[in-house]
Image: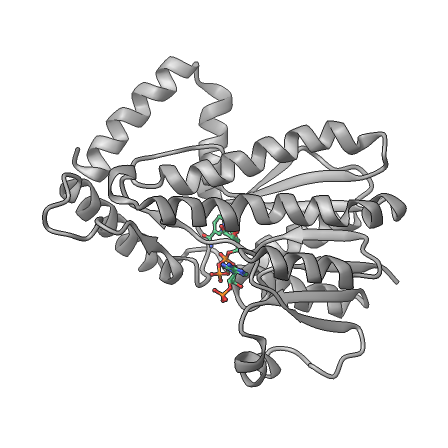
Length: 278
Ligand SMILES: NC(=O)c1ccc[n+]([C@@H]2O[C@H](COP(=O)([O-])OP(=O)(O)OC[C@H]3O[C@@H](n4cnc5c(N)ncnc54)[C@H](OP(=O)(O)O)[C@@H]3O)[C@@H](O)[C@H]2O)c1
């Protein structure tokens, strides 16, 4: 039976992936932070006595934890780099520490996990599935730092797709649009973003209004659809370069494929002005 690793398995896409792979009889190594505090909550979602499930405490921003995790993995067929979060706000309002932490979790952790697990992935002719974002193909005001982390993940994935092909390892990204998970409640705002004296106050207020509107949408897709795509990719023979999930993400991808770049940028300037008020 094959083994999948899912990082960030405490909620959202990651938790749904764990359920789906276990249901199909895979061995699942699920990593998450604060494991002991979460056992009770997790036991409502998963059968923690399932012999196919192995839980591992891992804060992906901690190099020593990544190293000891990698040492503990005996075998892996599919690595899903899912753990991630968004740092939002204008660059000028974000501290250096916040900037580095965003890259640590969303970019360096996946890169180091792939690097450390490659000997085992090569041995098993395995796969890497990186959970990127619509924001990994499209950037807008006040999310440039989050976008940068996902663009970096996209660049890494594209290069690795070529680099690892002849070694038998496939690499793919999933680019979800907005889905109902804990993502929005986990957003970290820039240190100065919510202050009255931020030069970006008008844009920040516009952004928060837009987020509230999006969150109240009844039709925001549930997280299962992303988990299902990951599950299909894990079982597929031929992988695409990336997969876009969700109507909003598909719409942006469609515009990008259709429009000349100059026209696309013009449209973005107009819509950003409308949404963010500046
Ligand atoms: N939901 C969306 O609309 C959306 C759209 C596009 C892309 N994404 C991407 O999808 C992935 C999963 O997010 P989600 O939507 O499922 O949100 P979520 O419910 O907040 O799940 C995020 C997971 O990442 C974990 N995580 C965050 N920082 C971590 C760290 N330093 N070490 C270990 N784990 C950490 C969280 O752990 P804790 O519970 O301990 O915080 C949680 O398990 C992320 O990479 C996100 O960027 C989400």
